[in-house]
Amino acid sequence: MPAFPDKLHRQIFFGDDALRLLEKLLSEKYSSVQKFILTDENTSVHCLPLLQKNVPSLAGAAMLSMKSGEKNKNLNSCIEIWKQLNAGGAMRSSLVLNLGGGVLCDTGGFSSSVYLRGIDFIHIPTTLLSMADASIGGKTGIDLEGLKNRVGAFAFPQAVVTYPEFLDTLPQREINAGFAEIIKQALLCGDKLWNIVKQVEPNTKNISDDIINNTLLFKAGIVADDPYEKGRRAIFNFGHTIGHAIETCSLIHDEDSLRHGEAVAAGMICALHLCSEFENFPKQLTEEICLLIKSWFPWLKINFPDDEIVHHIKFDKKKAGKPVRFVLLKAIGEPVITEKITEENIRQAISFGRGYLSA
Ligand code: NAD
Image 1: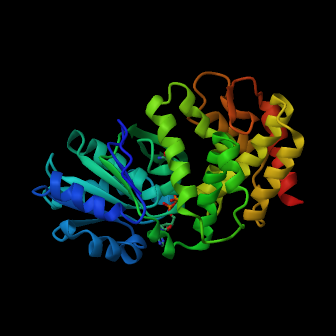
Image 2: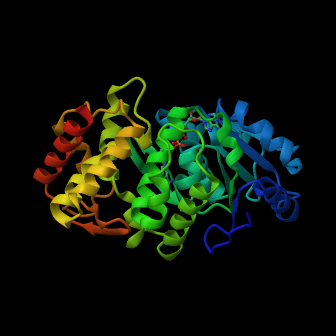
């Protein structure tokens, strides 16, 4: 598939050709530049050999490392990365390649965006979620005191290199978590993508390149028009207001915390209830979508008290002023951003989601 250039991402390389295009970019633009590859303990084993084999320009690259998992998307990881860059003699002209999932790309992107006031970086997403969503859009950042993405910056990578073969080693649980964001994107995009996405067999490893590509291009298109989320870009928060709060509860209480995509799946079920109640979204469609989400996450429950979830929503970064901003759907492909949802409505939505997932 050809490179997709847009004014923000400079280029998105997708498909079987992606690593060859990365090699071309590196040899043309970064041949004499010091390069660093950031990995975690999983991508260093499963993804680095494939990258090095296909991209000879990385032969002399220095290695950076961080620990995997949402609990490590924090300032300590950034400090470790900055120290490793110091030790490696990084300069303003240096380039960081972030080889990993959303946690690593968010942390590595943020670390690069402020190191020496900003050095170039490239995202090489290796999870379904980071390919379809997290690597696109220039949002970088870390969590603080359990609050999601509390510190961060908009910083656009020089390129996003999406090579689906990396998914071959990704555990099924992470594939499913990534698929939740694909469901979200399809609901926002419209019937064409939704009708393809809804037919994917739950719990499969085979997510077609077309689905990944169409999902990321949809996001890239919206981001290109609203890079700093002043308006329409906020639609991507569908399912995230309650989802992020559930994720925060899980990070605090669970040893093996919910994956981001899993929390978003629960958040979408809650939000769909509000869509039917307040936006005339057809109840039958709500039922169909909730059923589909449940078929991907049959074990998922909302195990935290309403008060705690609501407490975290109040601190969610999407609460711009006093009312909480909610993304709802009028129809598939017709999201609306509203501030009319009250705390009582949120409690009802959580109760709906809790009941639905427990049934
Ligand atoms: P993740 O980054 O935690 O990765 C999941 C796990 O898979 C990790 O243990 C990782 O080491 C491992 N892994 C990665 N690639 C692998 C591979 N190819 N083979 C084997 N193991 C592999 O999870 P994620 O779902 O990719 O990302 C979730 C994060 O993304 C959250 O922090 C979320 O907030 C963020 N996010 C960011 C944006 C954005 O716009 N920046 C958008 C959506 C989500």
